[in-house]
Length: 364
Length: 258
Image (cartoon, rainbow over all chains, first blue to last red; front, side, top):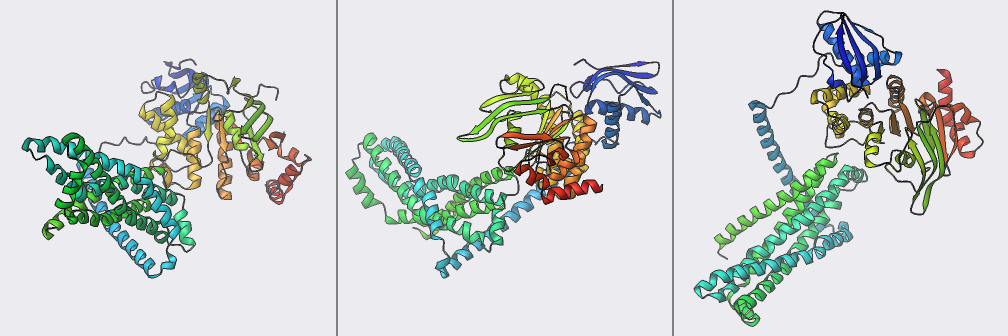
């Protein structure tokens, strides 16, 4: 490739060399006026070269001249003619950064759309609940295979990660609690600390968070990719209700399995705490068990497990709802999957806070 | 035809597991021609295209493009080679997270060091050249119809003014008017840009309208090459069925009527 040259001699722009997409930017086309453009020295030539020539020609025309293009081969003439047809008369104005009005508009749109989203999600919740009640009235329509499949996916397959997580939480609580309680010589209260925090709050909350990350995202991705490939529309044309076929089994499976996972998490959390108390504080498993039985009311367990179906409903509804929102492209699928996880974790924690207030008022 | 072929395939063998797709396939493509590759479903048309552009490593055989071996090039040579061709996939294969303008600019941004204004101007020209309206520039691929996506994919394929464009079923799924317009577009851009076009197609109308030569793939080889009329005389059941079937007769009659 030889670099292109432009020279102004005797009122003629003389171009030489290769006018190619990689080289035309080196040309200075902004200065000088001439009556003709001579291309006889141009060797290789492509669309970008033709673009440069037409740009130059337009500039000369706007200066009131009528430049002639000479020395072009037939192919070059054709290409220049094609470019003349396809080039905008005025270059598109470069867009400036957003103004304050734009930002305000954006804020307004965001606010309205999040309001609409909230309404839509509540509507979806109603639709799912109605569908599930409909299924209860007509049990023959319940898809047992799908429910069992999802119970395995969200429940059984999550047991290892959930129990490991809860075990470690128990260990951490015992370890941290021991360090503080030893200062008062009240080591044995570590049992109450572990039991109440795991049974009431942490066991079920952290399980719900893990399930939201694991299964909520899987719901969004699965339903979203079906939406993308028009499977949902195909289902509707076959007279199948996607809420009944896809959403209800997932939500039911989650509602059934999350309390079970919660119980497993509670158990392994207590085991982890007991082991750590034994190692760190010398509280033997026997003492741990006796103190657990005598000092921790059964309502602590009840408070934890009552929350589980509600968390399950939140995770299932948000996961399936976001999946239904997926539009045609892969990007929206990824975006909505992460939205689904973030939103369901947030709502789970918010619901947990509401439950805390509720139980505090009830004094249980 | 004495000139050195621009694409030359010799003894190509490709396999997927135990399934052999090509068994010693030979094919030459001359500079400046539009060659149509036809063959039944599963005959290995798209696989041939993928092998020629280096997306798929064949089990054996020689593939040279511009006189350079595609199979054993170094990464640098391959990058240089890749600048000289453009590929349009079946559904356009636009990057779904970029709008049309960014899609067309993508090869320029990767391969060249151009200012954003020049890139935008050149992308706008390419988009108009393939017959898309100006407001398509800012649209996302998901907002375009199938035909528009194909056009945008074509605009991206010709973004760097390649010498060869590979088109995989460019008219599949288009209505007859859209397909005819796409054919006309390919022929027009071939004239304007001096392209060589490697066209994988099923569309008999495209074969009639724009292809200089047709290569028929069957049984893992190129069964025959020649013009549309030469295809009529080849004595092979598949070729006879394909080129003398009711659809082929309709396409031929239409051409004669014009």
